[in-house]
Amino acid sequence: MHTASSRRHFIQAAVAGVAPPFILPSRVWSAETAPGGRLTLGFIGNGKMNSGHLNSFLGRKEVQVVAVCDVDTNRRENAKKTVIERYSKDKETAFKGCEAYNDFRELLARKDIDAVVIATPDHWHAIIAIAALNAGKDVYCEKPLTHNVHEALALIDATRSNNKVLQTGSQQRSSKEFRVACELVRNGVIGKIQRVETQFGSPAKPNANKEEPMEPGLDWNLWCGPAPLAPYSSILSPRGVHNHFPAWRNTREYGGGMVTDWGAHHVDIAQWGLGEDEKGPVEIIAPEKHDEATQGAKLIYASGIPLTHVNNGFGVSFHGEGGEVHVNRGKFKLVMGGKVVHEFLGKDTKGTSLDREVVMAERTFLTDAKVKLYNSPNHHQDWLDCIKTREKPICDVAIGAGTVISCHLMNQAYYHGGTQKWDPLKHAYLSGGDASWLTRDYRGAWKV
Image (tube, rainbow, N blue to C red; front, top):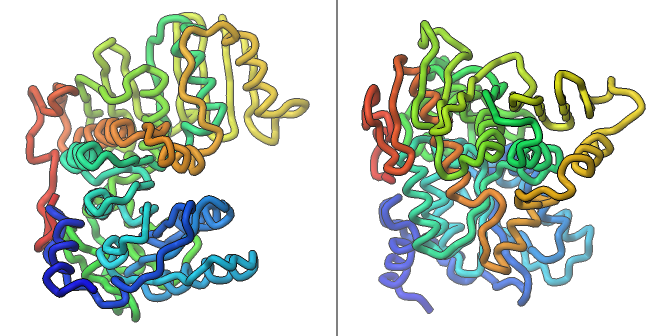
């Protein structure tokens, strides 16, 4: 049996640097271990995004879900019910039950949990992920990987120092249309790249939601965590189980607007195509009237190639001297010499399919390609495979961090204006920026 002293020692080691000491209930220490040979998973943050992840992993025989966590009673109990009903339906005889926790530290203290899936609001990503890594867990963490630049660098360090596998939830890398689009660019099929456009919505604004009566069963103090303790609003944390993506992401305190939401997807693909993974821009240029602008910010890479944020584009558009590649979810377009060669724009495109157009482009232009990118047919499975092999997954922590750093830098251009020079190796402003923009003021005992 563990003594009270050893319990305190374990939890302090598990969450070192991100939370105060925490005494755990005895049930944590008597948890059953899962059957040998199966990866045991815990899910932290059980809103809309993690409900999709949960259902996907419940269908995989090589894993078993043993715990869920959410600060909302209804959401965590609903997730627990989902797990129990699924394993009961499958007549899973090895299933020993699923615990539901309010505080993520209780879940992470369980030695029988191998890995966790994190899909909380953005302001919690880094703190929980670092605590999980320090507790010996492999991690799948939703994008955007962090709330600020400082957290991105700390998360890389925690992953490497603990020798763990972290997959960023940038699942577009595991979709064929995006990989082929990037291979076309990387192999020079459309010639020297002149510019890139990425389409997503507006940057975040300061939280201005009106106070509402507190939601029963919600630990609002823990929901806010390291961020400011704002008046409760159902816009930030919807009441109970919901089926939409909450608007906390549109506030600077808890998210980064669409720049870090959809931007984390599309900037990720742009940097993959440009070969800028783990590097990033050297200059960031704000649009005129930056504090009112909803598009127009630019990232300039060492090659001189500009990436421009637009609101009326294709997702990701690469413009080269000899052609264009446009890609979005379920959409693909290749233009050569001003002529459309392959195109699928959705259900309105008759007589073909996305797969056919992408495969034809691959066969025609990439048969003898010198550059072959990481080919992952499934983002979840890629993570599980890499946990077994201990190799880096398709969207390793350093890639996810590089993407989100670029998004954070773009947001700072909208927030502060002007032009900033940036050192992507030292992760520091050379001119036009302020080091205080790279982190945040953390509330209470929460620190990164």
